[in-house]
Image 1 (cartoon, rainbow, N blue to C red):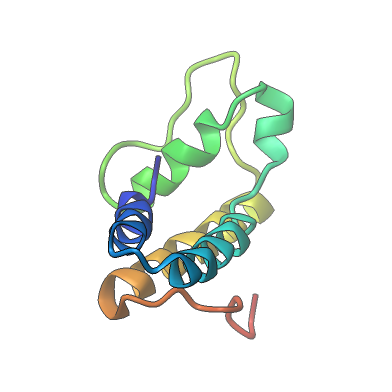
Image 2: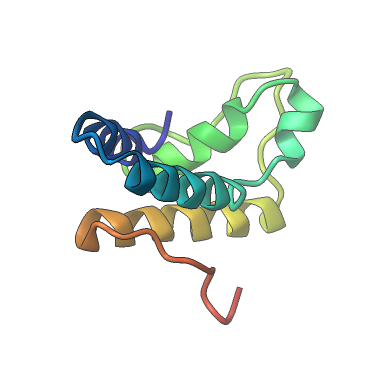
Amino acid sequence: ACFPELFKDLYDTIQSDSLSAARQKNARIQAFLKWVPKGAYWHNGESAAEIKYMLSRLDICQAHCAKPFRVLTAEEAGQADQAVEGYRQFLESGELPLTRGPDR
């Protein structure tokens, strides 16, 4: 929901009949999506807090979630910031980073 260009890129690769390249992209996307924190998801039963926070970092909406959903902890927000930064790198270069930054 937060990273539509990733999936458009994957779709375009599939449509180009390059399934081996699509498998590689899909594996990188799946690894990248593990950067998104899951703590609030387990508590809230859905990923509204994570998605709202990341969309707020992309200046799309506010991070606030209505009750009964909890917001992200500082640690979860830091993890989400890493995911957003990786996504921004993808938007600039067309490549997902393989790992998080050294200070993370």
